[in-house]
Amino acid sequence: MDYDYIIVGGGSAGCVLANRLTEDARVTVLLLEAGGRDSNPWIHVPVGYVRTLDNPNVNWRFYSEPEETTGNRPIPIPRGKVIGGSSSINGMLYVRGQRQDYDMWAQLGCRGWSFEDVLPYFKKSEDCERGGSDLRGTGGPLRVSELTMRNPVCNAFVAAAQQIGLPGNDDYNGWDQEGIFHSQVTLRDGRRASTARAFLKPAMKRPNLRVELGAHTRRVLTEGRRATGVEYQVRGAVKTARAGREVILAAGAIGSPQILELSGIGQSERVKQLGLDVVHDLPGVGENLQDHYIIRMQWKATQRVTFNELSRGLPLMREVVRYALFRKGLLTLPAASVVAFVRTRPELESPDVQYHITPASFADPVKRILDSFPGISCAPCQLRPESRGSVHAKIADPLAAPAIRPNFLSDPLDQQTTVAGMRWARKILHAPALDAYRGEEVRPGADIQTDNELLHYARTTGATVYHPVGTCKMGTDPMAVVDNELRVRGIAGLRVVDASIMPRLVSGNTNAPTIMIAEKAADMIKAAARAGVAVA
Image (cartoon, rainbow, N blue to C red; front, top):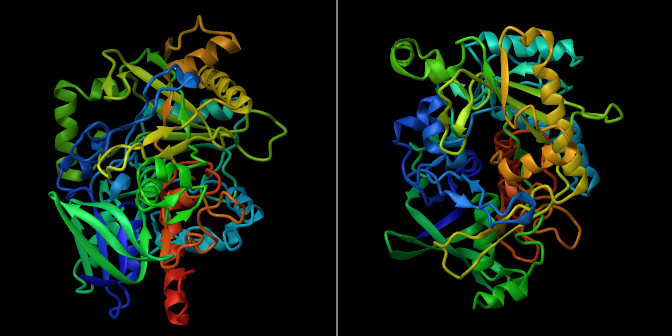
């Protein structure tokens, strides 16, 4: 099987690439996705994300290695195992991050990735319900909607945050992120707008695109220092496909470094320990892992107006009927109904903590089991952590999960910011606007007061916000894996296009930036083909 391009991974980036590259009818593309079809109905009903975060049929259900900094716990690392990847199981929040994030990339040597450079690609992908502007796009494949269900507790949160000094702000995806807002979400007509639905489905009718599901990539094939194809397996049968132009890894920050290592590309000693031949010594592969770490703080509510009550019995049946008839109500809700961005120190130029706010509370946050009482959650996470971890293959089996070591809260600044974020959450909750709803603090509890106590709670209960990035970072330094055009350094015909290329984590949820990366990469790939330039 010969193609111009082989894309490994049909997730947030891979579906975008498949659409954009096959716009040229002369180009042939093979998209390999290890997961299956997005036929599970909980994928498309927005609130169904609570059913997919621990479902092995659509989720790889990775776990971190136990680490002392987080209480020696294996922390769940959900990743999409389905077409659309993690965009098919995520919380659907649309957050670009701050303009300073991308300007920092450029200052680190990633020329062409400043905010001015990437803004056109955010706009290109977007169909913003609020309309177009100098910052927002319309007419793109990805619908970005406003929440139609405004819970009274959420409205009280917005008022409470403004009472303690957070500014009013119309758009956290605008020039200034600071403030508190009702969430913007990737929904179209009350259903999830995954990249499979938004980008891949319209391209499936093109004869120059082939999609193979259940196709688990074993390794990138190379001849000398050039990528020539991919070896993969489907239901135990090993197959190969050749790429005339490029192989593009879009398997995410967990999958892409593992595939490189199993292909002999990475730290030479690690590759040798796997019993494999070294194709190219590239020390940055699998390093520089960054992720957002969230602390779930929860309160009882004094009024029965939270999702805990709506999600049971007759109220739930009413919401099911409402959704079936009108595509509105409880079943359209994302992971957070309100988001806030706060500067925990006044000298900071921009927010350093994000809050996911929901009129609900969870007895088991991993399995998303709601408390029996009315509840409220206000969960802080540090936006730009300094802690760095790694992802590396444990053995030479492509079906085996890699070793994921996030190293959360290992840096003193991360510890300080996390504690400050928790104190800010309490400050918001105790503002007068929430007096009518605020009950007892149940997690961590009002008796937890000192910095050490708060940090201990964070270490022993916190979790990922599902935003791993950086493990094939872009740059010019010795630990960079890809250059500014996302070409793997030292291997011709091979690129990485996914969240793993981010040199630093962006200030917010990562689905929108990953889609932007794929949009920009598609133009780079097309330009290289027009110029007849080989990827070097």
